[in-house]
Amino acid sequence: MKITVTPDVFKLAQVFTISRGSRTEAKVLTVRVEQNGVIGWGECVPYARYGETMESVADQVMGLSGEVDRMALLDMLPAGAARNAVDCALWDLEAKTAGKRVWDLLRLAAPKPEITAYTLSLGTPEAMEKQAGENAFRPLLKTKLGGGEEDVARIEAVRRGAPDARIIVDANEGWTPDLYKTLAPVLVRLGVEMVEQPLPAGEDDALLELERVLPVCADESCHDSASLPHLTGKYDMANIKLDKTGGLTEALRLRESALAEGYDVMVGCMVGSSLAMAPATIVAQGAAVTDLDGPLLLAEDRPEPLFFDEAGVHAPSAGLWG
Image (tube, rainbow, N blue to C red):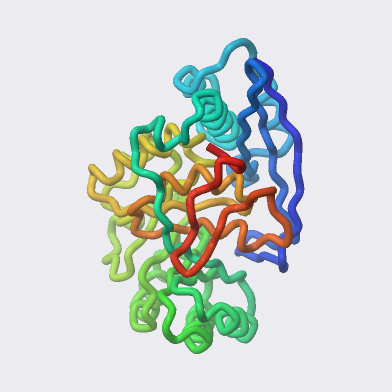
């Protein structure tokens, strides 16, 4: 078995801004696993929030040796970007070797299209109203927020721009408990359905004391199935991202466990190409919220990219993954 990792860069269609900063390109790592002349591939996005860099994640991947299988990989690498890319590459390799689709290997039905959120970049209320107007045809908009009471003006602007769209918001750990108390009732009045990670992950015990009038989704506080005990009483929904779970294998385990414990499930993504989103379309089946819009934010993508239409994001072609 031969494992290689290469950096790739995809230009974004426009500047993408969240509370932590802005970017104009998506930097990803592509992992290829070759065995008996068959190559499987996967993609990950190293995330500085979790102490990952392109170099550190590449070193983790290249530190693997010998024959690697998915179950052994769970112990060989921690949950995170490196394990995600390798795990997804192993699934792709197995599917190609067997001449089957990954969902057939999993004994699941073929994925159906899922309506995906489309993310509006953080900006002034005027800029966000313009973004919303340009994307008002989309059924579900996700609005990045920055903290502070200007977030109300931002949502009011987005609602003006897209009066009929469903809206969810992502605070990216930028709120305080008092700000939640102030903003949540207003956002509910404006038709916002949910907020992702309003408080910093290390300070989210405060959610135990809050009346959650606006449902709260764990993102930075939820990585893999081991995270679930720490969410009890704080969150209503868990955001599953393959770069956090460390691949499709653990993502499916987390999904099953989260649903069994009564959480709604959101399936999200980092800003990456269609290759990164492809395995997540399996996890997203029946999710309360699907947020796999990474390819829609790009100016360029992989060959045979994911297909999006009014029905949502479709399952990948065999030529892309799985």
